Length: 350
Ligand SMILES: NC(=O)c1ccc[n+]([C@@H]2O[C@H](COP(=O)([O-])OP(=O)(O)OC[C@H]3O[C@@H](n4cnc5c(N)ncnc54)[C@H](O)[C@@H]3O)[C@@H](O)[C@H]2O)c1
Ligand SMILES: [Zn+2]
Image 1 (cartoon, rainbow, N blue to C red):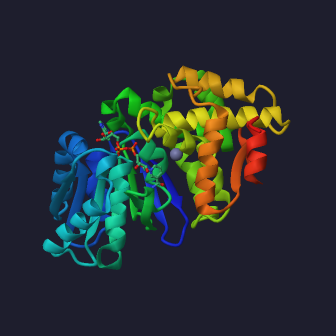
Image 2: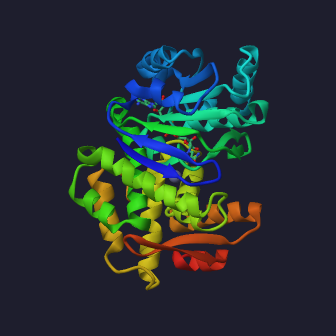
Image 3: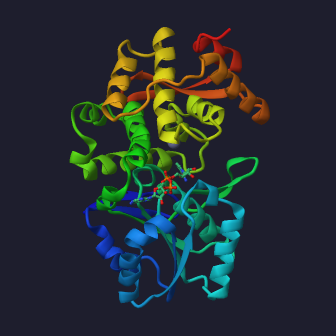
């Protein structure tokens, strides 16, 4: 079993091993000391893995109360979280009891938020089941729901007590959601690990999935440890994301998924960096090759002008400049704080 410890205020372990779902009960027992657990999952994931996890938790003597919500981002609302919290109150969970989140990022974000606000905070365990949630959302302690005004606007920092990652569950994940996670995986290589990037260029990610997850989580862990509440270095994780957010918005958060948009965003910013003499020549082509190898998009049909326009609309709202994450070369990134005007220039928009 691979193990990483995240050394933030409430430190916690991340365990990675094929077949680990079978040990979900025993492992949970090492961090949740109450009698009751609210097991939160979505309709798809519960149908696949709910019974196993429930059984393993019950074997350890827990009374398990199951909360299942309709799969999909449209469930990620305050209404669902309030319903979860009410469900915990009805079942009289105490401060010693806990939450287990079994699912993708939507499930983890909501269950984590519910655990953060119920009785002003109870413990929760993450069992992420998508590639994106295994390498990204389950680590770092960010929890949130969407508001009609925008995504992830209502949330809290609440670190999990434990993260249990079983790469075997990815076998049932469809190709689309798998490549969505690959957007983040490739990002980690770009910002911090030339070695990981090289492996992605030469190997099939599924052939070294356990190690791949370990390396991605290790990168996120290091960045989060240095910057738990997102004041500085954590911004590096936003490589490719400034353009991606605009692209997602231009498509109304439909059609182009987050991971795909991140892929396109990485190509855009890398190309801008090469044009400005900041990024090593040939970097963009290398990113394009890895994206193509994973059947991902490398460009969007919107023009740079439209994408930069969407960015500036965002910036007008928040009233700040842009912290563009750029590459010196593969594996070496830095934060470049720029004005909107400079950003437009970088992307060749006047
Ligand atoms: N908290 C953070 O730091 C953070 C970071 C990145 C993304 N996020 C959030 O994560 C969310 C996206 O996460 P996601 O892509 O995991 O979405 P998701 O949770 O909706 O999962 C995607 C789909 O895959 C299904 N699924 C999950 N695991 C499966 C499995 N093993 N087999 C078969 N089907 C499975 C789900 O039912 C769902 O239909 C967004 O809401 C985003 O805002 C949060
Ligand atoms: Zn992302």
